[in-house]
Image (cartoon, rainbow, N blue to C red):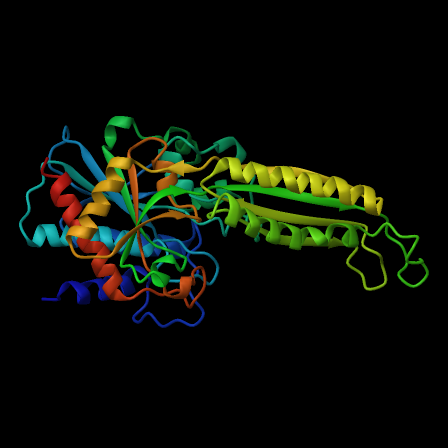
Length: 415
């Protein structure tokens, strides 16, 4: 019989559809694709090996249930199995696998729960394919805006609706995918950190207090295109010259706010589009995409205000027009205090160095938390690298996370 570490190693490969976790090109299991479906099939197979009942819900999430009684409360755990383009094999997979492993330990130890235990594998968590994240968890928590999705297309021109129906899910069923509040008592997700805090402070685990959902801006500078060789330097309306200093301004201002007000605030000028983008043409239009995140919504808004003021001054100085459009303004999500305290205490009792922290990345739990008490447990991620082939966490970290989930379930499911 395989020991826990060997079982986790084996199932990690199975969920990733590989024989060994050594693919230099990473994984491409985009949302609502055949590759994601095959990984879901592995989840179902493993769940059935553990004696769990499985089903697919109206949006395409896979559920594996340890049924005690239909009237008993249900504790849910899980994450996702889809990836970004050329992504890693641990983001999402770690949470699904650790939840299954915790159930395995409880069953091996002949534990008899008084509550149902569910492991959920959410569909299409990543935004890589359609630019829309966490579709599965949004749908069941009532956060999905179906009417805004239907015409959205991937890079091959396939719409979300077409992709959903290719997976055997009826599009009209998405409008009725929200779970009743009574279906779940709580939800807990385990995930790799996707950052360096745990590694840098030599901690084994992190318990997340809040998730820094983004504010996203589109800054557009409009000048006048003209010939680079014939237009004098004093007679230009160069959109790029006007807006370029914003890149450094955003970075330096955010660092200043880190020291004075909010250590968790991050901001990035992460997309640039220059037109006409010709060697012999003065730039007439430049678009910057800015991603701003913090669990302090006031700090985010303060930064936005300063960015707008900077743009007004640049507009006057360079005689160009600059517009700032808010594309996304999501409020931060704070996780359940009781679950947070219990996870922290469990980690300490098991002898793990466990830190409280915030998450700068979004996860399925942020949607679940809008409807049910929810918690998030982080395990270390080597060098903070994620969303690429070098993403990695030690099997020992998966084992540690599994042990915490197991002990947590033993306490919660016997109450």
